[in-house]
Length: 151
Image (cartoon, rainbow, N blue to C red; front, side, top):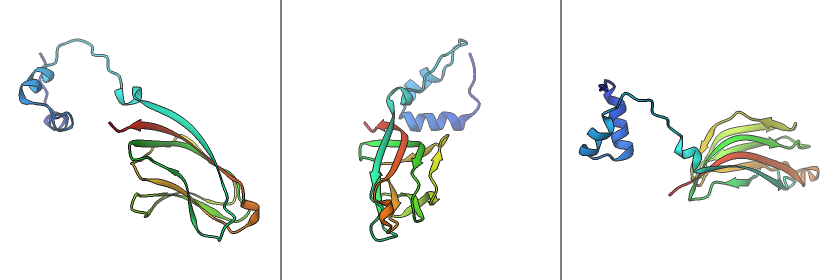
């Protein structure tokens, strides 16, 4: 039998899993065997690639919503491609309350990013700012994200 000496981990598990005292004793008594585990969260999620064309030619400096995390989902933003624009534009993550939280990109050149892991809660949006130039009437924006349903 093994003894758990990191009580903080046990406390966090009890809280996260809402364990009852009797069950806790049973679960926490570790047997000397190799335990294989899987990340259940990954098994219950999808990875999606979404393309969206945006008209950024409207009055410059207006944020357009490109993508919105639905109320019953959580996303992890993994990668993106933002097409080049004639006049400088930026792409931001906005909180559900409408505050600009994280700038993903600014400039005129195309932007390609991967190996990211940005968690997004329900109601978060990805917005791209208009440029006011007619040459930016059909600009592509694409994201790769992991989608987890909230049950």
